[in-house]
Length: 136
Image 1: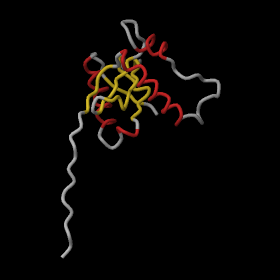
Image 2: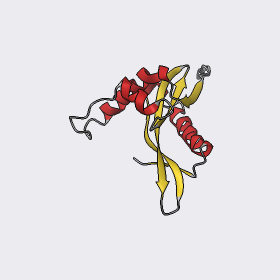
Image 3: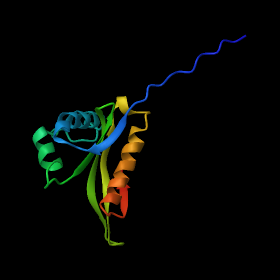
C-alpha cells in the first residue's frame, strides 16, 4: 500500500498594500536597484541610481510628482508600484499609468503582484480616474 503524505500546513502570511512612507525609502531604493539590475541591458551606462533625496522629493510630501504603493508581506516591503497621471485626449478622460511594478523573490507566487495591481486600480477609482493603464 502506498504511503500518503500528510498535507502541508501553510502558515498564514499577512499581505498589505499601502502608500509609500518615509520609513520605506531604503526598502524602495533596494527594490528599484533590483529592478534596474534586471533592466541593465536596456539602460544607458550613464544613468545613475535613485537616491533617498530623490525618493523624498518626488514620492513623498504634498508636492510629490508620483504616487508609489508598496506591498508588505509579514511587515516587510516586498513590492512596489509607481503610478503617474495619465490623460486620454480622444476621450477627455483622466487615468493613472502604472510606470513601474516590481515584486522581489520573497513576494513572488504569493499573489503579491496581483494584489498590488488591484490596489492600483482601487487608487485610480478612489481618485475619480476612469482608467488604469500599464505599458510594458
